[in-house]
Length: 292
Image (cartoon, rainbow, N blue to C red):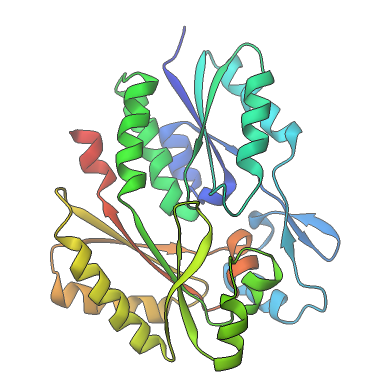
């Protein structure tokens, strides 16, 4: 039986196994290169163990694009499962070459019509785009209709990152401009975001996390008026849940009805952010978009 639209995502989306199964999302694994060995997020039992190993490593880890063989394997599986069309969602094209690789492979693949979508982000910031696409596919929407609603979500998402140590983003080449040099000299904590080209750039700077949170909260209050749907906030952290729980409590004291989630910055993205990084993300509630 022909199914509607398959949703395929790379593993940087950090979609839980439960949600992968619930929404029938195909995942392409993205490797981590650590001590000249290929590893994956699942090779560490917890993010804390990864960061402990990373902090003591002589040769710091890097990441690589998903292999073409794994991309083809996902295409083959979707085709075998009865799909004729698919959406392959990738992490931000501004920080990875995987989007361009995926476009070339989709163009050459036969038997499955694959549209490649640049999520422009990563982690569950992108993951909710995949959940929305899969939910809409289950509702029977066409691919164009699905993409239009996912675009609404993506283009009204606000992402901010505060790192404890800028050197990792500098080392792995994920930071645009001269932000790393300035941060290192002044010992400040830059507030980062994704620009229109989905590259990571600095948008502000503070000397303390407390002041960074005040900056983020002010930005949130300014942007909130533009939303015409319920807003969902994501707090991300790289083994720094105590801090994001404080931020969540403060947010709820000011905005009691705001929906919030915690997301983990695991090994794959933690390679670039380093330990103790935190993220503050807000967007329309994807479940509300799916309902309407």
